[in-house]
Image 1 (cartoon, rainbow, N blue to C red):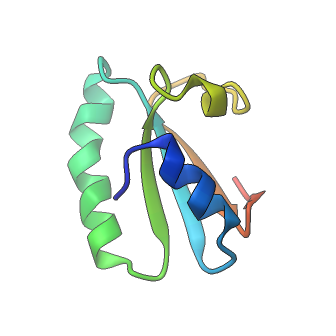
Image 2 (cartoon, one colour):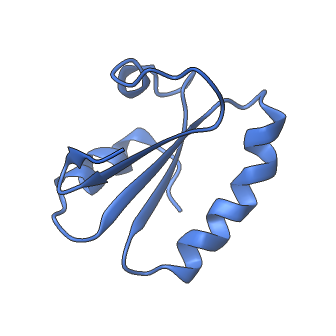
Length: 83
């Protein structure tokens, strides 16, 4: 599971599989509890990609998505948002 915005640009440009982006905050205890679960999902699912982005570190991407609660998930296929 990647944890930076540079990996996001690369992953969005790939046409295969899904890209699951978890938008989180370092201070959020729910995010911190969920991070190892998402890491296990990424290891178990080789067909799709998983990214973990802290919205305070990667605000440019997070501004494009309305984040009301943490964690917030965004799912893409071929660079197009699905959810």
